[in-house]
Length: 269
Image 1 (cartoon, rainbow, N blue to C red):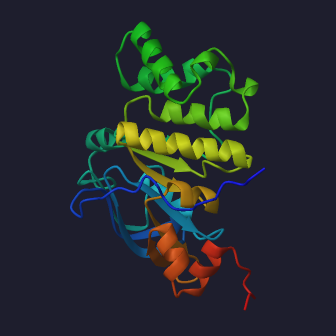
Image 2 (image 1 turned 180 degrees about the vertical axis):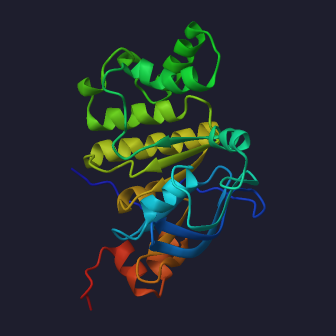
């Protein structure tokens, strides 16, 4: 059987306006308690972009994500969503900012006592006054978008890991967000399920023009889906590289970045 030629190029690459940023992070100091993980990092995310936040274990990727989604306050710096300051806005305005995006957590975080339809419907029950029939119709539409409409009445325990991830994305899309944050979407998935999830993310990006911010260390997914990435470094507590995955893999002169994208051990010569 003849093997197909593999490619790591990003086939969905887009052109982004330098002025069309939906997220702007300025001098962010991120950590917890007296522990500083990232000190003074700045970056932006363009509208419609699939943006990756990468780095080694323990560098602070998930902590930065919690700052971005309004879960944990940063130690310092500012985060702007669509030009609005997330952490320096009054409560009502902050809630309006938070309603502009959805979040898929690493472990899916589906409620085990609710069906998939009920899980997806939950954000609408909390933040809208829609009638129940309308919420159910929208929930089924979101499940259809991720290929799970026929499982609407199933419980999370009846699903595979990949199906739970897709259901979590459907719930994250319940309020029609313009930004989706995904935390380690491919973690724990087999290669086939992982690539199917990658293709779903690309399709949603193309059809909905949703901006994705993805925290991950899965190289195969990074090369498949990411338009641009930043690489966080634990030792310097900063961003040591920014660009396309292919560009960083082929042209970076930073040792950690070369080893990261080429899967080389620390003592490799």
